[in-house]
Image 1 (cartoon, rainbow, N blue to C red):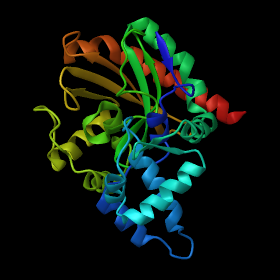
Image 2: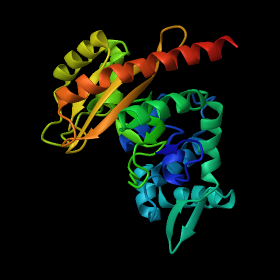
Image 3: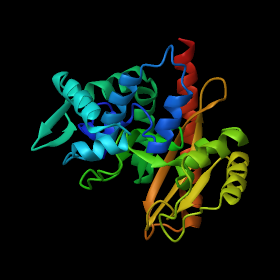
Length: 290
């Protein structure tokens, strides 16, 4: 069993936990809607460049980065040189990539977020019991962001699922549980921000159907997703609440499609998952009262 947390050495993933990675059109709209008296555009654009570097271990060209951040090449270059002088970005053969110092930003978030310390022993115990990988995520815009993960098999390296990794909320069990806790108008807005795309033949992309599913998930208290994010993967998630009863995270178990049917996933793992979520809620409540 391998525990992934604040010590995860993945520069790309941890840095991605800091903020959403908006698409080009969204970034422009967000900038235009800010109060010009308090909004520092240069800072926002520098952070946008850092976010654009996440998930690209071989680096990206200046042209690609400038285009994604809606900047001209000269402005992008100046910002990258500044980030480089501060130690957050490096340049190798005209390709820019995150430098190890970028980890300090992600670690600052993780170390200030109490969820991981509280969740780790409970998630470890759940993984030992059910022999399946367990993850926890929070909602960041239209994405679910992994904040804790425990693998059942330490010999299997899954670089796509590390702390800080982002997945679309609409097609994941973690994301749907988190979306279901939001008001309907917020759900609609988030689905507009990231329109559903057909990742696999099983992905639900109809917005009205998704809203109906979210209403059902909110009522039953769990979400099961069958091969909608990627083929051959099923997952089951439940909400985690704080002391006030607000959903602050989601907890899930994921299994390969050939290891358990959807029915077996519910029958074998829902109750252990719910029990762990209740224990985690109690632990969070106790920590809040200290």
